[in-house]
Length: 249
Ligand SMILES: C[S@@+](CC[C@H](N)C(=O)[O-])C[C@H]1O[C@@H](n2cnc3c(N)ncnc32)[C@H](O)[C@@H]1O
Image (cartoon, rainbow, N blue to C red; front, top):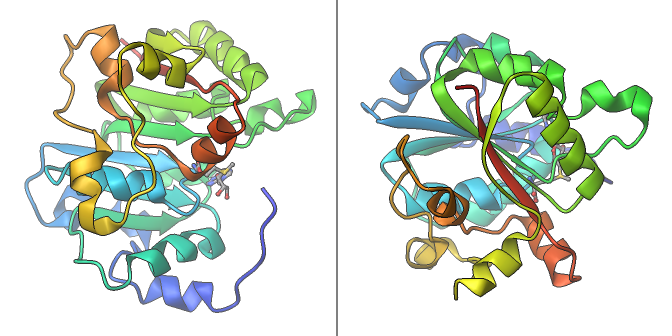
């Protein structure tokens, strides 16, 4: 992703009420940090400007959400968009590299991980930088509760196939998958939720009720219909979007 550095983004981020400014200090204490006895804690790694996690938090106030990205310059853009909106107490952002996740989350602390349009790192020698490589799957296994899930979306078929192989090789179970998410919605008469103002995100986001262990494959795939920034761009160009949901059962 090409990125313009925004010099003021660091200070802006650190002073934002949405910032988890020192995430390492919250290891094992995230639920306490949100100061509410939440049923669930979910995070997106590589959230970019954060539209997905922001709309999800608006659609589902009963769960706490953390958007994580390695650059404040991208998180900043999402935070600017939240100016003037009512404060969402179930949403925070943290700026860190996914390689440090186990320093930031304790064993079993997360219920669900979202990976949306993760950088593909196309060169073979960079394969272990892909967020669905065995190296990262081992970390997710530690920080997810038993039965917790990964939800992964991408337009990159090579990365998707690689991810399916890595999941299988590392003993994960793919609970649901599609190679064309938007065709899947269309067949069922559903629309992906598009860009939304914070004001009416609840009514259009479509996160709906939250999954249980016996949720059907179909329900799993359609449970969250919120589009990310990249998803809107690529699906707008007619590229099929792949999605999978996996768990280490
Ligand atoms: C292609 S963008 C996708 C953004 C957003 N998820 C979407 O779908 O619109 C990938 C994002 O992941 C972030 N990222 C890439 N590698 C990362 C890592 N190792 N740790 C944290 N963030 C990372 C990048 O900074 C970038 O914002």
